[in-house]
Image (spheres, rainbow, N blue to C red):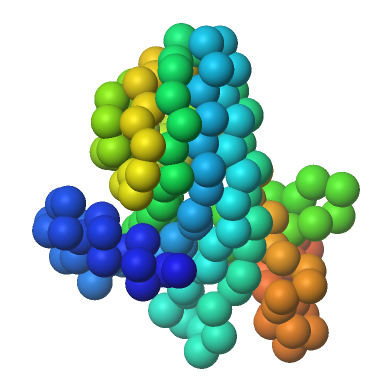
Amino acid sequence: MAKTGLDALIKQNPAVKKQIDEAAGYAVFNATNVNIILLVLARGQGVLFDKRRKEPIFMQDLKTGEGIGAGYQVQYQVVIFKTPTAIDQFLLKSIDGQRGGVDVDANFSAGSGGEIRSFNPEITFYTVGLSGYDLQANYGGTLYLVDQKLNDAAVLNSLPKKQQAISKIFSG
């Protein structure tokens, strides 16, 4: 899944390959995006590749938002992390004890994809559509959760912990 999404984006925008080569890591999510007049919904699965780790981190994503839009599209979202700290911050976000990231974005797009402006300058998001068509001008948020079932105990235990991150900030 990740290879298909990444290959589709690089075919659409070859400059992304250099960004990924220079990045600390990246993630690829698949999603079905539905825009119904004022409501935006999407749900999918993904995998995060942190260049410091041997094993990938399997994840899920849920998106909701509002704005003017119409369409249905199967798409991939590629997230590029410019620094290791950006990956750690992404993984440290927690909802009901589940590790994962949260991003709020503003988006205008027509067609099969493009770059999404994130409010975090250390993370760049791209979308690439595979089927369907989407016309939207919206804002919303996406919740990214570490998949507790697909990751083994070693991966789950190796994820950054809030206490470690706080002591790291104060020590140095």
